[in-house]
Image (tube, rainbow, N blue to C red; front, top):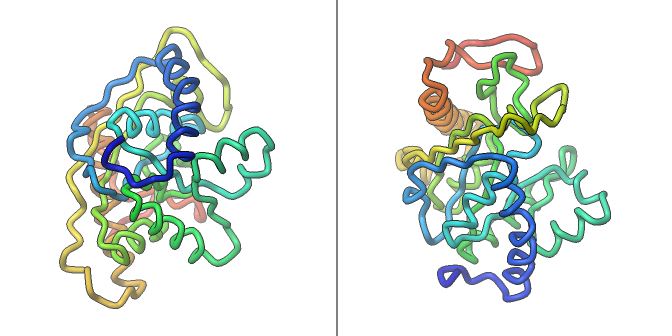
Length: 242
């Protein structure tokens, strides 16, 4: 943890949470982490596909085991659960209001980057609704954060943990023991976009690059090519990408 500038109290909170989460995850699933050396040691934005309601624990475990402190950008509704709220506050996770000004969460994320933490973002905003589990259309917040702060944007693909707890049935399937794989990619190329006004065109271009990179990582983990286009949850169909 020597690279982080996070306060001692937060690090202690992480240590307490890790004492519970790490053995639990090891018991529930076999974990395979690939190319973790690609995660910068001085702060980064990790953009991950979302396939299960428990995969934030799996990805956070991977980040923590690299000697880094994750800061998950999660829906604000989670802070309403009393016990969970205490854990989220102690580890200073970042609530994202769906209807309020998103600037507050981006400011909190920028402050976490200054502390050397790794920001964990799910660009899709929710567990994928793609019928085949592929990454779907995404929001632009991860790219906005990376462009505003100068932090590297790292794509991450995962596959397998949805077999433990999937969507939409939310049934827990403990046996046989599942394998949760995570593959870290190279930084999304954004240099040509940095310094430009953050217009919708710039943000969408960066977001398309990010989702293409995540989808490629997922295809590698699945051992099959991704379908053409991305699922749009608003229209309920797969639509072509630019």
